[in-house]
Length: 407
Length: 125
Image (cartoon, rainbow over all chains, first blue to last red; front, side, top):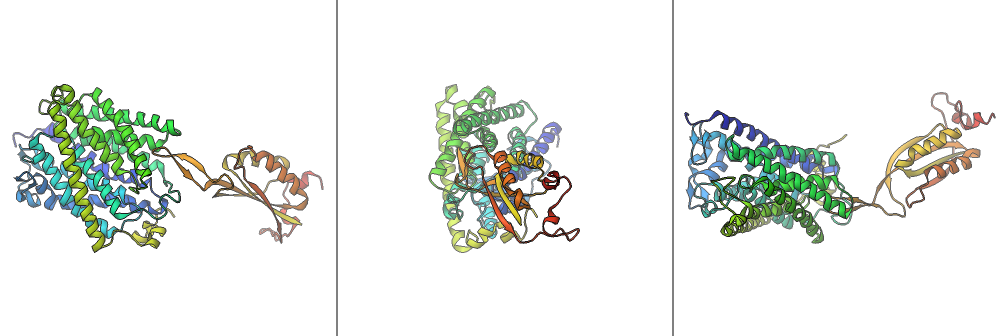
């Protein structure tokens, strides 16, 4: 116990609460963008994920991600049911906070990641199939990739890949899994034929604002200590979000008017992109990371629309592509001046880091897309991923939950 | 004879139209929010990335029951107040009305339509 630092522990506990809040925030971010008849369903896809993955993480998720490495691919079962995860520190991951605080903090990341994917299948997914998918996805995709990147002995960590707070683990896996799932699931009825108007953009603005705030815990907390690195991460996070929001505003203005939905989306994409970089780069680099992330997200959405692909709330464009850019940008802008435990990137004389980042990106994309595609196909055969045509027309609030959002 | 005027107009013109109608003494009306489109077919809104089309626009439907001899003046007043000259200004429809009954008093026909200070009492009839 003598190694436990109360300042560090306090910050990680607060950060845990901040990251927890991001999932309900995401619920509102997504909930505002769907049609009125699917608001509750969409809110619930995120909300119930808090329930599902909290349980999965305690029982098996934590040990698969952070247990003693089996060949660098998956964690062993030492921490099954959180056994041995106590108020003592685990110096492998965080030497100055209780091991249980680390496990709880990581739990919130494990929760929000599958919740991000739900944006791909809103307004048509069969709830039963979603429940099974989410638990299996967390176990088969999230936990292994978290181990590769963050687990001691994990293959990508050993390779030297940098991912401060989950650009690869969270955003690339969620984004490309969303893409795979949407391809298997198919479009919403009337997609591209009748307008699908967002029912409540204020919800989305509220959600984005809370996500931004929560991200201070997501990235700042990833320092796992109340120190200079944490504040560096907090400042780079805020900077990239600001930079991307402003850039997105101009992109949107050039095409039509400065859309509010666009501006808040820009902020989120900036937050995504800076996630892997936050503890390795300077605030000035964060301006560039955010400014480049905005057009990547903006035109990825355009491309997705051109392909007539109903990846409904653009999880791939925002998280998959934003995360990919962020992981590569870490290989460009990382500097040991910010974080001596990190590495230098291309712009600091180490082109090899960019290559390592690219390998990690490709590995995560191929694995997440591949496993999700197969899993979705399988569940489509076994359970059926979609509600019936009529249930879809009625809306999932009534047909899946027997409730309506507004009387 | 009694008529009903049904007006579909731009939301943003409602206050202009109401004010113009009060000026000539049309004091009773009801309003519903509707969505629809005529020849303009819809509008383009700013989306997350670029624009998207919405085909049913918010419009206001104004319903007025009035006596035959006031129809022309009312229609012209509404037309002038609601007009912007742009496509999408809306339409005015006039229907014959079989009967009007005021619930409070049981009055029927023209009696049921009379208000203190309305277009007919002003005329000093």
